[in-house]
Length: 130
Image (tube, rainbow, N blue to C red):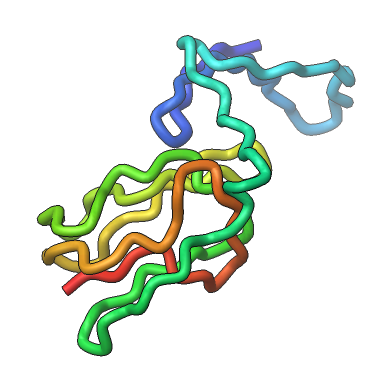
């Protein structure tokens, strides 16, 4: 067995990996994963937080949409914030994984169409940037 440390979306894990050589059957093992640091659990949305906020999106704005269904765990920007290309705007929790939604451009946040804890569908508009 070999030990490795891996980081997924900023959370470090210690894993043990069994090396398999030809002709040797691996021994089945039960594995449980836990973060190597004390990460917060994603918050559970309340009934009032189960949908996106519908706002008008400026026609000349760049749209940032949800790549998949999930919950908006953290909204890190607000209208009027200046953002840089690659900056994390929202952390979307889907299938127990945290997915960082990043700005595709430098600009200013024109609208934020989701609140923390809200459920979103793939393709929903999360923010717009001018």
